[in-house]
Image 1 (cartoon, rainbow, N blue to C red):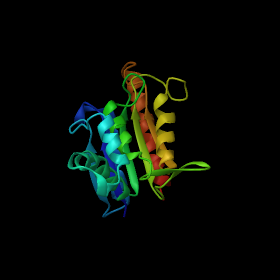
Image 2: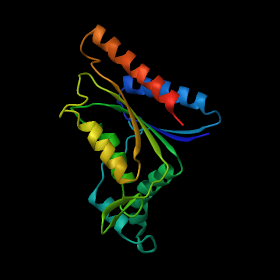
Image 3: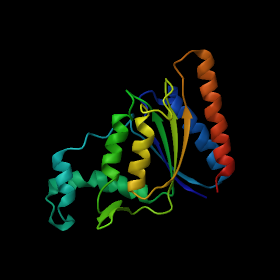
Image 4: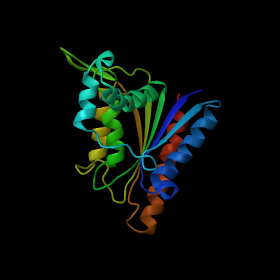
Length: 203
């Protein structure tokens, strides 16, 4: 049994390739681990506002000293962090927009990657506070970027997840989706093959 947090970020709902692949992966993952608990978060259907200075400042005030407005501002991040902490498996469906991650996903990251909550600063550098969490990244791209300097997603996500202590990260790529029908079919087949391998090796 796993406790799975499934986060979607595509603008295109069920028509999105990243969502479709992640849905398939999640279906197979829960079949392999019956009775798993799944919490779904669709950041396009229910987008988070961009982080503001007032919200950030509210985090820095001790909870007992916050004004009612600061309590309200801090509650969103607190809720999202609590949600993340309650799960041991993270499934992210990630399209590529202008060589980066969707801004809605960045807004989620900005609230869950929080000093004193999911990581802390030490004399030796940042230390992640999330132990035992595995992340599965399902990435869909119109072009071919994996392993090139234009793939800004992979490094960023590995770094920010690692900052929180999530170092068990597996990535599945569907690339070339806008490079003609043959390349699209190849990209989807490669992604599904990688998903099958990943599931067969999952502990």
